Length: 177
Image (cartoon, rainbow, N blue to C red; front, side, top):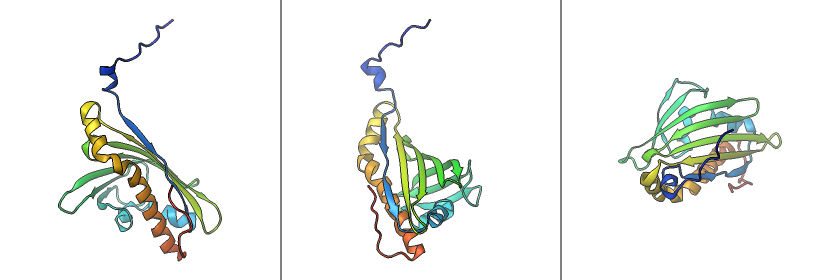
């Protein structure tokens, strides 16, 4: 028989990850195959996401273990980003990414696309942000507080616009929430 775990005191609690979750969803007026194609060709992410892809290793369509190296921010400031595919399910249009952002921030991202009809789908991001422990995590969270909510919503909006342009759709009907 084990002993119950003690409740951590305040100094121990400061050493744990500070987490933030964001799960935007949008209806995309384009076939799910177009959205999936955009997502699974990471060398082209810079065409619609706010990133500059510097390399994809190994090259080619998305696969588990593939790493995408990119930069974000103003051209003079090269903020390194690293995306590693952890799951690819082409049958169900789902994938997972582990993302490394500047300042030791990491994101566990799951994305799924659900066909609603032949010409539209629902895309959902599930982003779990984790921060370094202690004061570094608190500072990183403070510096990124606006991006924690607006970043995933902006990425989803950019994906929706790109998919709808490729499908020849008119004005977008869904909005990221």
